[in-house]
Length: 248
Ligand SMILES: CC(C)(COP(=O)(O)OP(=O)(O)OC[C@H]1O[C@@H](n2cnc3c(N)ncnc32)[C@H](O)[C@@H]1OP(=O)(O)O)[C@@H](O)C(=O)NCCC(=O)NCCS
Image (cartoon, rainbow, N blue to C red; front, side, top):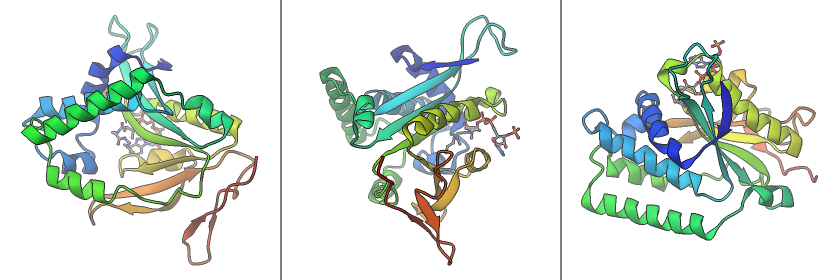
């Protein structure tokens, strides 16, 4: 297996992979309670979401694909999993990741219009718009506001037949390598399905993000080696406080 940057032609396979990988995820099951009946609509949601991320400023998508020498080789290179990374920050290093082009802006506008239209005519029959509204109302968490420079893992998905082979772990390693080089932390909000992998990789739990009492994400942070304790500290009562970042 090897990693490569995502291309436009990957969206269809990535959507198929996501629709099966996230079926068991509490958040997606709550947002898309009719995904079984309207599988096509659920899958289309991932196509639009990934296209939007692909065209977002500062976002990098890596896919892991099979090689000829892999046990899972089917005669063609298949997508095993993917990771969506976003570089936050204002430094020159951050800005180098945040290129934005007219084409990307136009693509985002079109996708937004498509989303609004889908909502207006109810073309995504898998979704609960009521739950989307609750989710959007709680989206603006401020936990990482003090961490101006950071990499954020926005999404990680591995196809069911490729899980427990180290794919998720390798996809995370790319973020660790770049964050180590840039001396910035890595952040994420993990679902219950992902937290054992993240803990194993060295992420620390910093808090919880509650969308409803049953839909709770774990706010996690990883510090580059040699920078332990620079980005957050655990207080005596067990709560975690993000510190102001050290100057470079
Ligand atoms: C969570 C997910 C990304 C893990 O990917 P993966 O490629 O299977 O993970 P890895 O093979 O790299 O796992 C490395 C270690 O993480 C832990 N781990 C991974 N999946 C686990 C699971 N389902 N249950 C418990 N521990 C798990 C294990 O310690 C594992 O090591 P081991 O296999 O030697 O025991 C994958 O299961 C997935 O895509 N799930 C559905 C989508 C999702 O929940 N994404 C995360 C959103 S926050």
